[in-house]
Image (cartoon, rainbow, N blue to C red):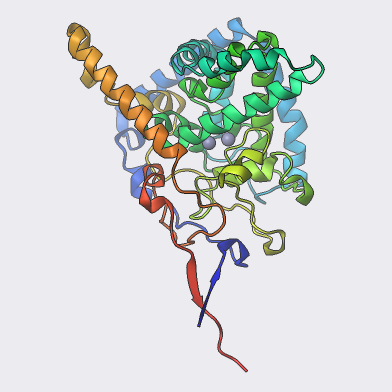
Length: 384
Ligand SMILES: [Zn+2]
Ligand SMILES: [Zn+2]
């Protein structure tokens, strides 16, 4: 006799096996040696120092912000740590600090990406369609409606960032830290601005004030940074009302049954509605243990910034052939839309999931029939 159980009922966590070290350690830029290694390290430091200096002149408030964030969050991480024994100077913390300090300069690229992506996403079109309805909403309620709409669009763009391979290239940078703490949330590729751009343009199309839409965007960015803190705070009653650090830690967890969940930015309602909510039952006392991704990414900021654009050089010749270039762009856009469609209408696997490690070894495998694994069948214990 068999019964079907949910993995969330299982008392033990199902950590993924450690990432194959060969994937990370034998990459060419991770194993430099001798003089070349020192030369490239020096050059890298020089470029990062120049980026940080430029950032300081663009907006030096970020430097104060980082000190304030550290002063507020670091003591909580020490007193109530999610991962006990995780040091402030943990591996690759310098990469995250470099991302944070170079933030203003990276934001210049990000704003350009937001404008291009927001315009090309055509999210402002449904916004325009909603404009007459939005005009009828009382002014006092308008900010709440705007916030809901913004969060709803953010859910979908975040989901696509994971499940559309081209978009995942950029979002993978944010998921590469294997340690979550006060600074890891800064590790974002500037072209990953897709997460907030469509929502922002959607609100503009619907007739919302640009300032209000900007406030929502900034609020979500700050909230996002807070969600990465290494704190073990968990309020059971909050889980289905608002996103929280535990919710976002599960989003980053690299464990077989948690991948592809918790896309919500501020509200978990969309995850509940579309079957991507993942919070193990309170009684199991299960907490996220492993973070990061299985695929290779360079360890340092410059490498991580360049990595999503790998292979682009091969297509440079297209600039000399505008007709072929236009056809290539058309095919690429069509493929992107097909991937977005697949992600949007893939089978929901909200309740029962297989816990077999490796069932979601890559993000590409989230799409397609393999995305709906069967529930585990376990024999009932025979007894009196
Ligand atoms: Zn994500
Ligand atoms: Zn995150």
